Image (tube, rainbow, N blue to C red; front, top):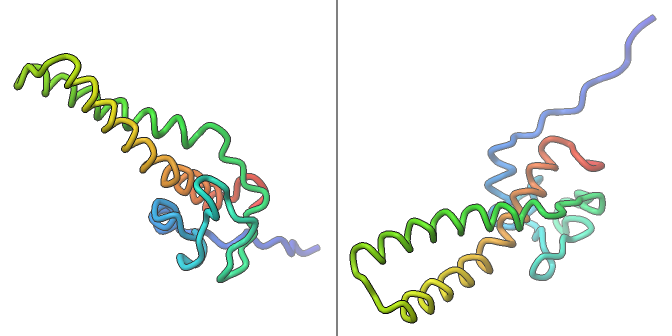
Length: 125
């Protein structure tokens, strides 16, 4: 009796994550991963990799909040201790930075989560 099972080919995690952070296909790095702000394409337009089974759920939002919250917490402390701006000025500036950083990071974190799932063959990959 011979065992004809061959393990699936390993996928490079670092390369996939780098491509996911650029919102590109984790397989080829050429096709777009997202077709609107946060909507994942069903498949890659370049290599045909199927993304229809992908489920990122709340992971990207959690990672975005984690990163932005930590950076802005330190920024709030440093700005207040060093410069002592007016409270309204500080609130307005940090609100603008928080919203901008969150909107910038959210699709990249979604790409990271999808690329990680793809590299680890999770959720139907």
